[in-house]
Length: 139
Image (tube, rainbow, N blue to C red):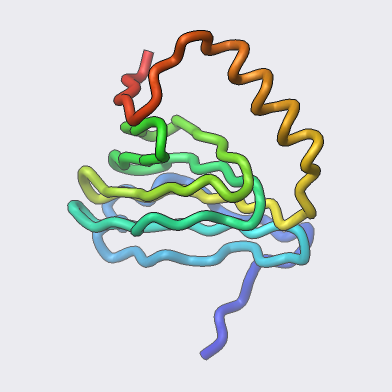
């Protein structure tokens, strides 16, 4: 049976899954020409291997706790915390406990000039930054 996706203008319930999390599965909520929205469900100890997306993404933890790893950082995320990644950034997810996250993928063509400017801006903000993964704690 084909999965139906939300249509433009359709209301989508994004409340935390709560007790339903134990039986929940990953679901594509929106699949449009320039945008995808996926509720990723991972049970404790399960992971999504290293991969990248063709467009910019956001990952919003809605339930449980997940670790989002990139080549330069590891973010332990709790409900309400969000991470943005540029197109092509390698990342992996690990469920510390049963968890769910909303993943938004922009499928628009990337702007190489904007990406270069953003990278330069981040380099200026982190003078002397050490390469390699680091654990970031919620502040």
